[in-house]
Length: 244
Length: 262
Image 1 (cartoon, chains in turn red, green):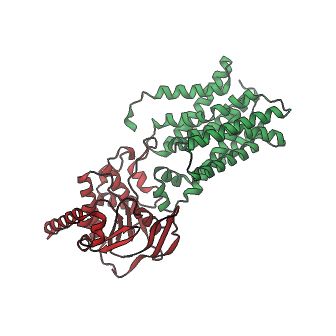
Image 2 (tube, one colour):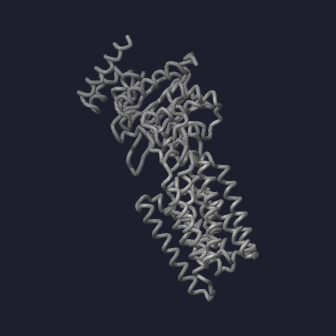
Image 3 (cartoon, chains in turn brown, orange):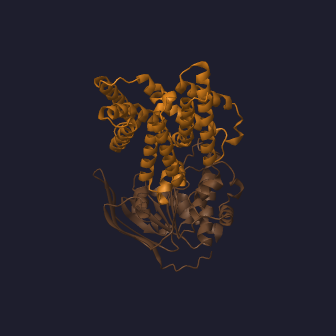
């Protein structure tokens, strides 16, 4: 599980993606490239087309124009937006994890430990807390040993400390495993601290690059405002001290 | 008690209850109760057309209910009216057209038997329908079981993991069409959805996994049918409603159970 992958290797590349819905242009000539050990976060205001872009990249949705090439046989682990489990369907965490998967007892145990859900494997799915639920979804996505992890606003419904620990967990996975991460997130302050590269989307790619550089980009500032940009810079700063 | 028609009634009721219990779990999980009810209403049109065309009423029911499901899916795509509105329009139109067609036909049918079931007149041919249809339903369910459960838990997740969600949804609708067609004679159009829902809802109290819930629902359905038919013979009450009364009584009995299994 070392991070020894060829970082030059491209897992997924999209060019000139266009999606139009009811005459409205949702994505306009979007290009993105995800390498084998990239950690890319897509940010942007509501309705900017983030989720649609993710759907196109994962293959849920056929863009109206553009080309998407995935590495042949690419294993994608998908972590959906939060879900509300229906108590009418009785199922334990363990059973949920292995539904439709060929996972042996040992790998379930190992991944459960990695994602801190080893204590709740026999808990009914419907009584999990928000954080436990997200970690369970994350664990499920890891069972196929994915090369690319795709997360759609994974910490949206967590409180601040829940968000913090979720992103910590994600960072650790990134450091310990050889995988690329593509995430859509609203939690700007968290994203800035953990991610390697930020893509700022508002129907088109406004700007992209390292978090620090992006916060100084005029396009970022015009989208999120000066105060936000300043705040982001602070978050990033404090983070580098914490680990420096 | 061992007259052939009574044995046929038990055989028919047990067959339908076994399958209805399992399908009923998905009705409960996927909130398709109103859909099942509407499907059953539209079955009357299927019966009328089946009689008019001189083919089996089962075939008529399967055809009309399938058209109903496709029409519904098509109207849902338009995203203008809510699903319960669409279901109300389709179901009651079909029911009304069915009634009108029946009155135009010179056929003398016992309407009551279709509305509330008439299990004591089940024929051997109908038993074939129930058991072959039932086996087909259970096989298709078993085949797609984990895909169906995963899709019920999270549609996007299932899609991301290569479940053909459109196909699976259509399959479930088709299975419900089949179960409606074979259970009309047992409990009747008006009570079919309760035969689907009540045993499954009761089983929820006793199960910790989707599979045990389905198995317990099937067992409770069989119990309700056996006790219901026996009761209807004993007290000379209509069989369909007596079966449902029994199922409801089981639900009420198990309701106070502690929720430790939640």
